[in-house]
Image (cartoon, rainbow, N blue to C red):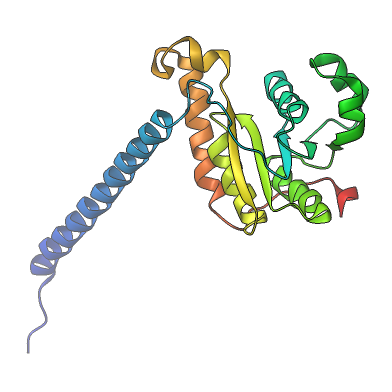
Length: 217
């Protein structure tokens, strides 16, 4: 049987390459469309008005990153919403006394019922630190305090570290989220898109890089 000539094979190869290129392009476009749609849904779901918390939990956890978060968390503690408060991700040099000077809560309330976690390096580390704290105290429910745009990722990380603990979100709405729609501000849009990418990465169970300081092990 005669071999196909190079002149005959060449158009077939070009046709196959064109089909593969078209398929690859279609997959890229579909992926970009899914990414954009996912981001729009993520941004639309971020709370822009703080909601009233009508229940209590065993403990309260606040992830550092803004003074408003700590202020709200200490007020929840003062109002009896939890037995103890964990402030996770605190700078190694920051003391409970310094934190107390920044928030409107009695010093005795912090001294008796607040704990500082200094080992977390990122949100994954916050989850690890929180898991140790909650398990040591036998807590089965936690109120989670963090910024509204950070809450989805925090719940993913905490849910993985504490699958048997009920997590009650208390999103803190920052001024930039209240002021105007996110799409009207380039800086807010950039913040949310980067956070959305971090949220997607949070679904990957194993990631490189440390989550807590070496002395935490």
